Amino acid sequence: MNRLVTLTPEEMDQSQQAVWKEIQSGPRGSSTHGPFMAWLQSPSLANHAQKLGEYLRFNSRMDKRLSELAILTVARHWTAQYEWFAHKELALQGGLAHDIIDSIERQERPNFSSEDEAAVYDFSVELQQTHQVTDAKYDAVVKHIGRPGAVDLVGLLGYYTLVSMTLNVYQVKLPNGVPAPLKP
View 1 (cartoon, rainbow, N blue to C red):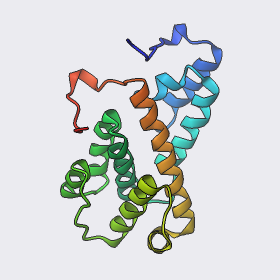
View 2: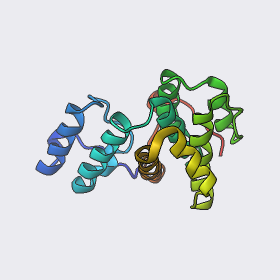
View 3: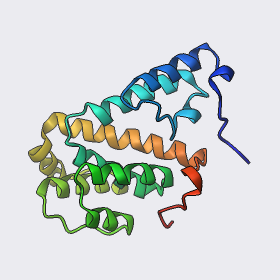
């Protein structure tokens, strides 16, 4: 069963077209894959979610390397194949080392040489696994990215949880028959 209804611009109503145009005119450009087509079934949700995602991905207070590290922890936690596929390359471009990415893929804690990466990873994984964060993990994140950065990190983890859930529920396919990169 195909859960994802792919709409052409001609098939979209006015509110869907408005959100679609806003997504395409923003920093994502014409890259409107991932959760967007599913979200367009509810244009108000699509509008709010894409704006939050635009802030978190392109304007947050975190270094791209750290943002992508956090996103990969979410993708791995949810075994969100499309999210992993899309963000692994962005993580490499942002300066995250191959061995760190490979460890996350295997669901192993990486051997970090950078304290800020270790702090973001530990915070992200603890929050996803226990639904809480200890004072030690919180303090380590604040030390490296500040209080506003910690708020952005929580938002990023929540947003990419929404993205991952959407991708999984709507069974968004990888492009051109690319095989699933993550093992369940």
